Length: 169
Image 1: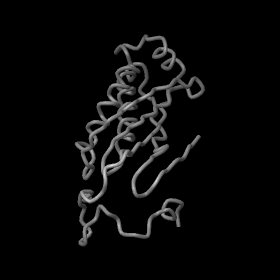
Image 2: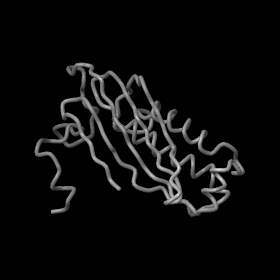
Image 3: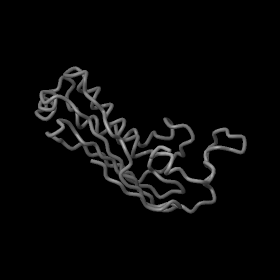
Image 4: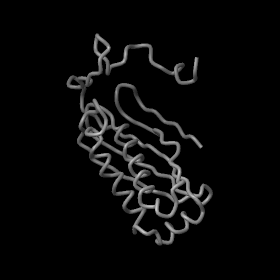
């Protein structure tokens, strides 16, 4: 048994109907509560590319500002990108892109908050993913071998399943 299958729930998956076909989960009976999610990821590059971005010398302009804005916009579009994902009213989307000279590269973190019947894990993960993809796009003229790594859910609060928190190095 893999480490992943050991953590699977015993109950049936809510996204499958009686015939095993994908369905959107009915959350209409749930109360709207405050829910948050934080996701993180890394993007690794050469020291020269990192320095060019840090000094503002990338050919396409403001790499980090553009990537941050793309992450925010992506969180707001998650239901259009992920099948069966509920459209949610987002009250907060914050994307941080933090330099890490030891990689060299950046840590990307996204925090999303709503008051709704379902959580915002997918929105935070989407924000990190699209911010990383945009950073790659903005810097690919400098380096094609940039690597996007380790996108994961750091924390979530609210909802029937309760709070969740993990930190991976």
